[in-house]
Structures are given as C-alpha cells and as structure tokens.
Image 1 (spheres, helix red, strand yellow):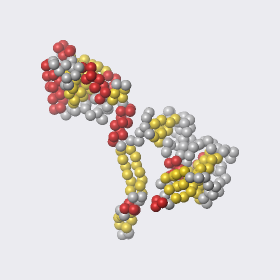
Image 2: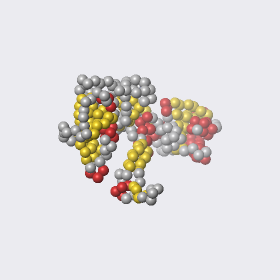
Image 3: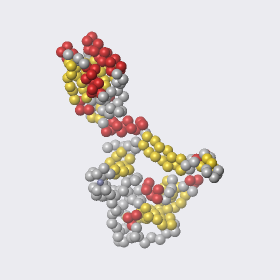
Image 4: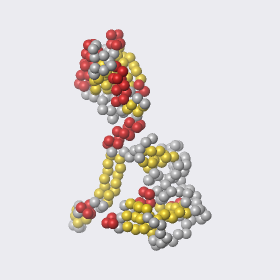
Length: 292
Ligand SMILES: [Zn+2]
C-alpha cells in the first residue's frame, strides 16, 4: 500500500489501472450540468507552444496525462485563463450535450476516475490505492533521433530519422516491491525466486564441536548440490542469530542446537516461522526436499 503512483482498483473483479489510464462506466450528464473550462499551455517539440482548452463536467477533475495525450503534446503547463477558444477538447461524457464551438474541437476521455465510480467490467465501486512503478514504456518517436541526426535510408533511399522507444524494468525497485508484498513485523520474507540464499544453516553454539561439525558438513553438502547456502557460525549467542535470520528473510533455516545430542535439529520456514524437528540423520535429503 505504498509507492508513488495512484492506482485505481476494483474490489469485485481483477480490474486495476494507473489513474493516468483508468476508465470507469460513463456517468450521465445533461444540458443543465455545470461545465468547467480549463485553459492550459501545451508544449511541443522545438519550443512550439499552443493555448488549449479542456471542457469537462464541474463534478469531475481533469486528468493531466489524459489531457496531454488528447492534444498530442509533450507536456501541459498551467497558464492564465483565456476566453478565446481555438483548440478545445471536450470530455467524452459531454458528447452530444455540450454546445461549444471552436476552431478545432474534439472529444476525448480527459477526466480522472474518482473513488466510488463504477468499474467498466462489473460495476464494482472503484477505489484508489498506491503502487510502485516496476517498469515502463516510453514512445519517444523522433524526439531524440531528429536533433541527433540518427537517420537511416528508407526503401526509397531517403534519409529519415529513426523512430525510438524505450522499455525498462526497474530492477532495484522490484526488490522494494517484493518486500512490500512479502514481510512481517520481524523482517523480510524473500520469495524463492528473489532470495539471495535458499537456506541458512545456523550453528547455535560454536563451542560445541558436534554442532559445528554437522553445520559445516551440511554447508559443504548443500553447496555441492548447487544450493545457495549461508552458514551462520559467528561467535554470537543464539538469540541474535535467529533475529538476524528473521530480519534477512532467507526462506529456510536449519538450526543445529542443543537437541543434536538426541539426534534432532530444527528446520524453520521463514514465512509463518513454522518450526519442525527433524532427524539429524539424512539431513541433506530433508533439506533438499524443503528448498526444491
Ligand atoms: Zn470490476
């Protein structure tokens, strides 16, 4: 429930969209509905600007990105209101209702979906939540290739600028996203796919030679099987070691402790912190079944 983007979500079906692209069921307006006209300055390539107007029901808010796309601009900036209307975009909800005249008039969805609006798929009451932008696509067109002279010869042998796009996944942001979805009040819970280690072997008391021997043996055996394993053989008490395991969030831990004298060790699953006592015999097989 954190992140910088506002996401519109339906509680009753799987619909979800960034507010910049979200849609809802059309609301009904009539000729008596109050209409707001917003004046903006649209910015285009090479310093070209144009004053544009947007008309929409007074009860809904203008969605900046939808409005920007409706006039094919690079950006919209606020400017003083002007009564001379040349280019006008009217919200699609007012089509057939409004009586505006303008040199250049068009209709487009330029309104922001509000909480409580109806889902286009099922009619559910939409609500806002927060999200992290994990990846994005930009259509750059010839915005950079033209000034940089990045040209190619087309089928007629004519030099034309390349059309560019950029596609990105925010790898470091994904880590934040994974932990946002997978944690508890003790720390991280890495998923199998994202975990830095598959299993953590904790030697409870490193002064106990048997515990150390089994820990090191298991560590080597797991490594030989291609398992990413972390061995905690620090000169710490058991308390801080288990706390660090909970904080780091490696999916599984094998705790080699006092009960080794009875032939028992403990396997802990980080998610839910479920503990299971298992035999120290055939320990490698038991652990391999857990992590694979
Ligand atoms: Zn729905």
